Length: 177
Image 1 (spheres, rainbow, N blue to C red):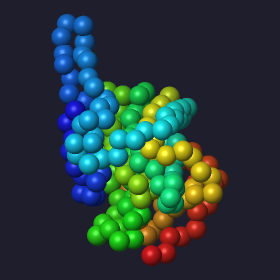
Image 2: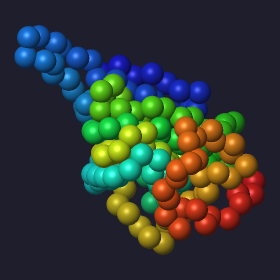
Image 3: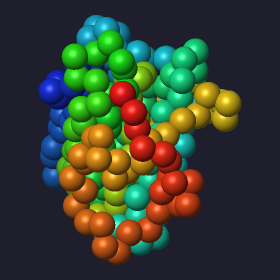
């Protein structure tokens, strides 16, 4: 696997190294040892799938508070997404900064998201499926979110029209530092 660090500390774009032949290719998408060697959280306890029928669907921006903070490894298995994370760690030098990465079924990229980051994505095409590997179980009492279009973050989404979003994700209050 090829690990590329982003401008946000501990956030990585991971690309499978493809071994190609006349049949197609083979690639590793998970290796506990490779994650451990980089000091990344390799404890995965849950996997989730999100299927999204329409382009423009936006999910996020979600995170869990300690002691139930989540590390996520996210991959688009069908279609394409613009995946966004926000640094929500108050002591971080990149607090409230964001990074967006295009993940597609064709590019096979994954995004490693450590604890303390809000996460969300927007679908770029119809019929998009996203696969998440999680380091923590879901705890509703620890679940939090920030609004996708909050001016405190200034995220530049691919489109805001048409936009399909849940009432909950659209109703988070303005973030205050």
